[in-house]
Length: 270
Image (cartoon, rainbow, N blue to C red):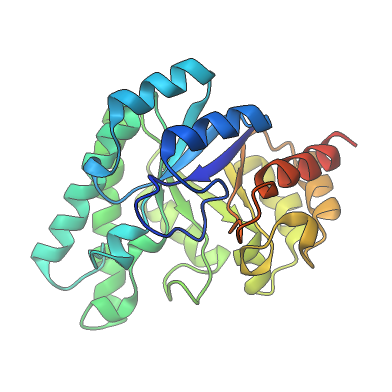
């Protein structure tokens, strides 16, 4: 199992990057705190200086576990389910460009979270779901040729009205039927959807390659109403052997990344 910290390039506000600031400095801090890797928030191939970043990864021994792509939609409004063919094609092209980067970083996961958009991006929900499924198939085929896993995030309805419940997402995965396509979860989203987190992780933990650790409102796990002791016990019993990714707003608390990791490690090792 690996522990990963979400970081950004430090050029824009990012409420999910547990270690804020410039990327290479954040990678060094992550290594100092005891993380095994980092997850990069990214919208464009130009967001990072890749040669410098890869040198820092080599220096610290960390890996990039996944690429978080939500800004493709939240900032650039490119939607995989759009009724506009040009918009939809641009979203697919961008995700394939990021798949190239994921491959170059050793097979990091390509996350499909907020970049899926919303059903309002199409003329109607039926059109959206058809468009999205076709877009996802294209991305998966391209990513598979590079050895890149595609991680379809179970996000909450406040972020997207598409695939925010487990069963519809599982139906989608069965339709697409791509060997490199996986569901992954986030404790905050499960909490906000009213799921029994312990039961969900007990059932699905062994089948998800990544779980995002986050309290409600992106709070640290040791300040959350979520019972992480129970959740991690269930996750461990399920046979989970993936990546625990810390997606937390540091709220100007410089030690939150270190404290959150120690809290979760202690629970896992009990």
